[in-house]
Image (cartoon, rainbow, N blue to C red):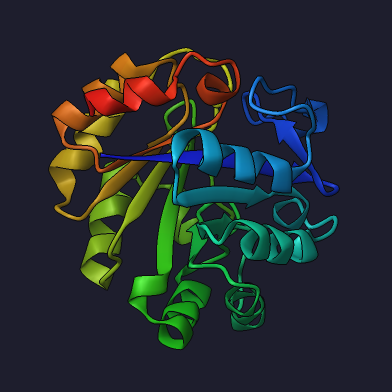
Length: 241
């Protein structure tokens, strides 16, 4: 079971994501370090927990108001972690930029995908091993700008993505992000039943018991932020996995 720490970045600063309401996000206050500098947080995740993977959301890029590509380069060079990034990539040019910055895997989120066409072109450019598709969900429904995608259920889209050759999927429940409200087990079970590829879950994780539950029902990985920053998940807890 992979536990993957999360850093959400706006304006070069790590912020506390809560419920997908990005205009209200504030610089994060973490028990792991004294700053909201993403580099410091990445190093704290690695030093305190031994994490080797890191999920980063470049929210400026996702919202089309800027870019944190220089910060991504610095995080990679400073931490040498395997970084997966969602920056709202929708074309090969941006995909190339991320890979050149040291990003291990590019996350293509349904929230910013306009159709299957850019997904296919990016897959052709980068190869299937470097791409993860994130099924972005809010209140049980897929978020997307694509008419091909928005009408589908999460499990139907997961099945279609597997058929296309996608190797790994994230199911990100934005309505639960940062709220420590628990995971949407019914939704997760439906997606798990529909595909055989690895599934990573994000949103709502409160403690190690939630992660154990996810592991036991067949989830491959968990994206965790708030529960790490407030020490509700400690290094010793990870030994239970």
